[in-house]
Every structure is written in structure tokens, then in C-alpha cells.
Length: 336
Image (spheres, helix red, strand yellow):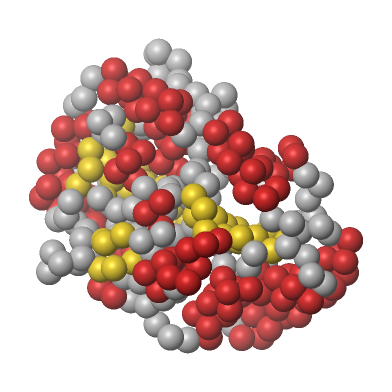
């Protein structure tokens, strides 16, 4: 939202997730109240991701004939049967809601072109690949979908001082439940940690519940942290040698661009926008196999500092915040 605030006056609504139906119902009521109060004075409605959180505002905006925009990010475009993951995997109330939102929206953006339509072979043990991406399930949307690539702040996410010691493997993702940990590839890294106590791992972005469950594995070489503020996260990036993201489904994660700008050497799965972002400045793994990931991790941990510099330059050249801002501003401005 910070980029939008530079160009527009923004009225925000933050939808708080709840695991109970009473909590979900109250949030929907709160969203409708907020939408009825503020949408009449707004010119447009913009939502990051499609889902329950955006339904009320989009519906009120359509009644008021206000332009509506949705920026899709990954889960809301995917179907990964092997993990029972993605909004299009299972026909339920959420998928019905998301389909309705996409049909009603005036413009839809995706953070990487792979979210339009691609084949995910990494998550398919058969090697055939799962058809995924927004247009794989709703091809009629093609005329109103555009690509608005992600980017990161090259001024804020900086390399550390030369005397900073960098070591260990870092994994960063917002993980509130165990299925998400699996979908993001965290289980694979925990498996490797158990087999190789000589490799130090740090997990960032975990809820208390997830941390408690991981601690049951009694892994002495794994540090568990909750979600961090920007300054704290930058420090964590700067003190780690490698960023590992073995996700089974992604768009273009902010953490990948941020960590590479801070000089982390990236190891990613061959999924969606990550291989293109990494290019020749890191490692891309084709299969979620512990042996191949372990070999790549050990190689990256021994890599020279120049590899981290090359990772930063990769993002500076192709995924800067200014590039993102220009495309996002154009995307929002086009809806009238």
C-alpha cells in the first residue's frame, strides 16, 4: 500500500483472519460496515488478493458503479492437488467467492506472468505437471488481466558492512498453520536439518502454534522466529549466507527480492516467478528431494561473497521498487 499512497489518497481496511465461524462472520460484518461508510467517497476499490476479505468492498463498489481492481498473488490463482492447495483445488464457498470477484472486477493484475497459466512439475511427483494459473481455470478473464511484476526497495534492503559475518540458511514466510509450512517447503528444510545438524537454519514468520509444533522435533540447529519488522528482518537477511525457498507454489515472493538485495544467495524451487528472478545468481531446484537440496545448500554456503553481490545486482537490474511503482500506478489509473 505504501506505493499507492505516493500517488493516491488511500483508505485502508485490514481484514483480520479468524479460525472460528463467529470470528469470520464478525469480520464480514465489519467489512460491509466499512465499505458502506467509505466506498461512497472513494473513486476506486483495490484489493491485494481475492478472497473473503475483499468481497464486501467489491460488492458495494459495484453497486455504486465504482471501478474495482484485484491484484492476485499466488494462492488465489492456483490448484496443487498433491498438497490440496490453492483456491481452485476444491469447490467450496471460498472458490465461489473468488470466482465471483474475478468476474465482477474491472481489472485484474498478477505479480508474475506465470500466474496467468503455467504447468507446475515441481509439485507433481509423477513428473507430468499440474495445470495452474488464473487463465487455466477462468480463460474468459484474459481481456482484463495484466502483469504487474513485484519489486523491492533497493535503498532500504542493503548489503551489510564488510566485516559482518554471514552464515547459515534462512527461510522466511508467513506461516500460521502446518499445511502452509508444508506448501512453502518448510517441512523439507526441517527434514534436512534433522539429517545434517552441522547446517544452521533460521525460520522467520511463524506463529506461536507452529513454533510449538516444530519444537517437538527437538532440532538444535534450527532457530524459530515470529514475523519481524522491516529493520529486524533486514538485519536477519544481512547475517545469513543463503535464503532457501522450496515452495510448491508461489508468485514472486517479496522475501526473495529483499533477501537477494541484502546479498543472500537464493535457492528456490522451479515454481512460478522465482526461477526468472534468480536467473544465474543462485540455484533453482527441479524436484523437492532432500539430497539435491542438501547438495545445493552446502555448495551455496561455501560460495564466495561475490555470489551475494551478483544476487543483489540481479534484483537491482530487473525488480526495483521504481519499476513496480510505475506499473502499479499505471494499472490502478487505467480503471475508470
